[in-house]
Image (cartoon, rainbow, N blue to C red; front, side, top):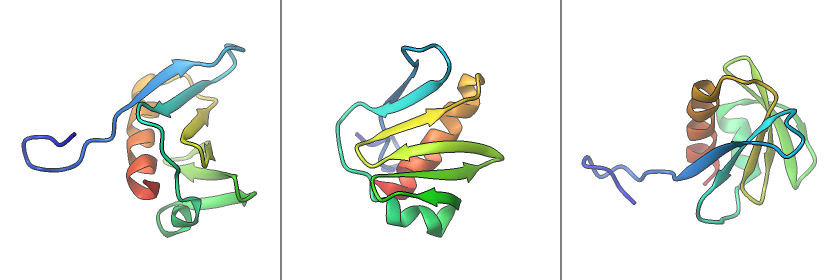
Length: 91
């Protein structure tokens, strides 16, 4: 999907995790994320190959290569902003 200016839109949804302890952002269309691209855009705290921990806008985010981001913050708008940045960088 693209917007009016021709920029590709990243479609994802933010929802509270089953444990209610965190939030996740998941791509609506399943795709692999290229975690090796994270270091070009963000501070990588840890990289296990299939998942990485990055810091974006002073927030730690767990990025899974299968397309899920995990957050421990409650600010849904900030989660959406950070998710957009990460998904654009690694898609």
